[in-house]
Length: 154
Image 1 (tube, one colour):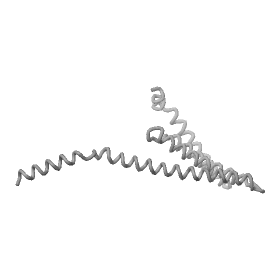
Image 2 (cartoon, rainbow, N blue to C red):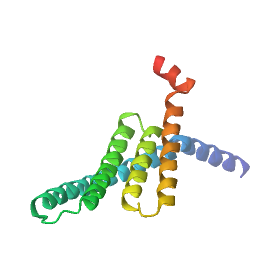
Image 3 (spheres, rainbow, N blue to C red):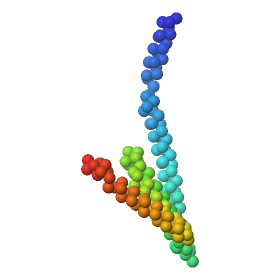
Image 4 (cartoon, one colour):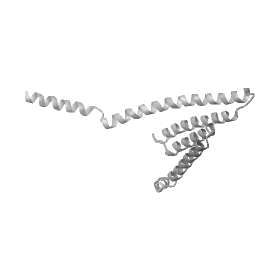
């Protein structure tokens, strides 16, 4: 009986060793899921960006009394779509890596949109401008770090 158990356990170990390594299988499955989700998101963002372009044309052609503040707000929404799509493209081109500077670009654009939309309260406008300053300083720090320069020299 003991000999039979030994053969069965050795057989089970041999069969288990044929399975793909879980350390490579799980990340591969998750990477594939992320790539599919980002592809779907990019498609939806492209559709929404095309919708914004149609809105621009409609606004220019049919608007009798143009509201330029609303039009400028829509332009900034368009740039947010554009930046997210370009960030997804960069993700696939740079071997599944999101560059930090794209997040900073999106943050700056979003803050500019908030200033344009909600500029009635001076204190909020000042805080939004301060956030933009922090994002610009962060971008400057990222571009001027020694690690970044050494990577660029290779």
